[in-house]
Length: 390
Image (cartoon, rainbow, N blue to C red; front, side, top):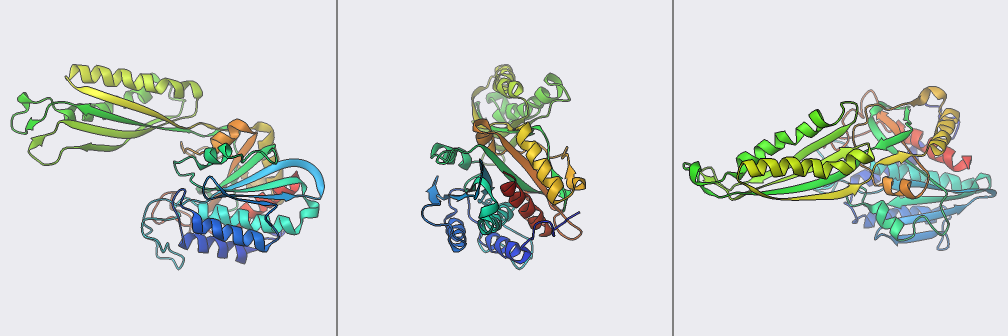
């Protein structure tokens, strides 16, 4: 059920915001036009110099609304950045920027939060406590949330709790996905350079072939997931890039593998570098290869606070109906930089379904990604409801 009459939904405004942002995507830490657009809209509805903080972590914006009733300091957050890819969908609001596309729904997140800020400003006397609207740069791999924390995002005022949403094609429009505990996975990356001895492709006996070793390692690393860790424990080791050689008849000197590791358990996460290097060292020794292995810790596991999550359930039941609430079991091992915020403050992250009869079927990061725009109204109801809940 999409009970839009429970909180009046400005659908034309939401759609206009989202389509403007979709047509003008900007990459991580380059969201200057997006930030300027957000600031203009915030000022037009009553936010001023005293309540706005701009250029936080380059392009981030914090807008503070002090309500007319006592209550906690609540942060509502939206990420602003697009992905470095070309859009292929033929829609009127298609990206106008080659090499940039809103293929993860962040345009919708900004539209929802911007409309919510306008609505809550109009009802500020009803707002319990203070609401901080966070428009965050650089979620896609560059940890914009962490950068904003380092610049005081959670202080002045001291934030008590944080709510975030993500549009999600794995749920039908009208549904809200809520889950306790670990919600998104840790997201780490690794690089592995394997060095052998190059030579003629017709005389491999005079070489030490790094391609053969690297190819075996791609498969061998998967035994960590299939043979060392319980099948009930979600873990992913993915090699996303394999780079070696320059031509067809030369065995090269080296090969490079780049990849990502995702986990939902802190102990498993901590064990992964040693597990991987044990296999790398053993195989390289057996094949007379040298190696350099670098493991880069990325986003932590995003863990929802139970009490804060209960507030999301309460609001969803009130503004959408209890039948709208679902447990999203098949989200996958996404990474999310709100994990840094959840480590510092109680937080709740939830999903808003975008899959409708005609649009919203393509997965996140698809060059054809689009949404059923009724989902914007659902997200708006949730964010306004959370702001009014206190």
